[in-house]
Image (cartoon, rainbow, N blue to C red):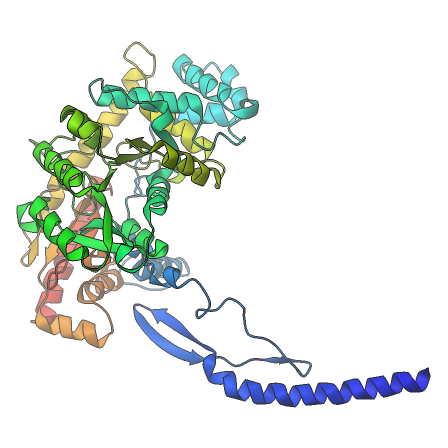
Length: 539
């Protein structure tokens, strides 16, 4: 028995040596295959990786590599949190560690995060959320009675009377009922069915869910999704992730970023040569461009959608953010139904709203909803199945949404404070919208359309040819180079227009108008000084 064991051990050692030599030969042959791209500000380097050995045994390469991962994910780009934001975060860390910079703070004007920019929460919203999160506070006499009543109603709709419980996948029923009543009131009495309301993790979640439903086909039958250029990068990112086809239509910058149906037709005709356009996405008020679509424009879009058999997706998360005189928000649903049964009974529509924007700015709670109109009942069943996979939207976000659609009424104790705070936020945004337009238009080489709504400005910048050539040498698109220089020299983080899409040969950046007025003035002054210095350097 002992001798046989020694023989087996010797045989195993010989086999191991043979396998090792064979493995070394395979390793030499395959070493060049282990490469990965290292993306730094849009450049790509190729770096070799070799297999390693542990105790003389070759270790396999990773199962999940850049070569084996989902190729659609590699095509996803999201400029709002891209390379320039990553650099801003690093600069913040360096400042905290005592590094000397030409600035004392990094101002992130790249994203519509109201509370991060200093906006104070609305008292009533936070009071009710506090009561929902810690119901013992319902005994506290300092909380107003209407806040307690809202909290009790929400808790009664929750499993175990706790916002820590899962809800129905479509959302808490009483909250969907409140959303439907809100829509009816907003749209002048046009009915809204709670069964058509789907609560969501912000509007983004619902938008991606709807796109998932509609993407199908291969080659020329693959779903095309029409999106505006400039656009909010959520759309292009989701389209890439789902393997759909992006169909771009351009807004008219010379007409305050208006939407022209003739441009929609041009885009649609061209797209039908290589895909099947089935979806038309509209952002109103606009992001990043800040335009507010007229009623006539919305009617034209609805007619176009009907004629061309397109599913309409209306992103209306900025519906309370309208500042310019003569501008008014019109919901797509309201216009659709006022156009009569020819349209209201046939055109398929999904509209979206969120707690993250408007006067609330409660981005972190991730509350939102969508309403679907004229959806095939069988598809609606599939939609419910799809949203069930992620169980439910965050219940605190649902609770917050309920307060947005069911705010204090004139006969309730919180009404006066609520309206004062709401009005103050929207008035300040309107003033900052005007200030931004005025100051940018005094800077040579900068052209800024009126900020009619939303929370951003998207000015056009004229860049010298030498600057464009310098950017190319650095491996960057010109407006990324411009924005990166601004960040390094002034500590101001903006998003280059190339991240949203723009006409060839034009350059822009997006900046939020959310900073407090005093800080916004400083930001505008710094951008003005930098721009003039930049132009002089490359002239």
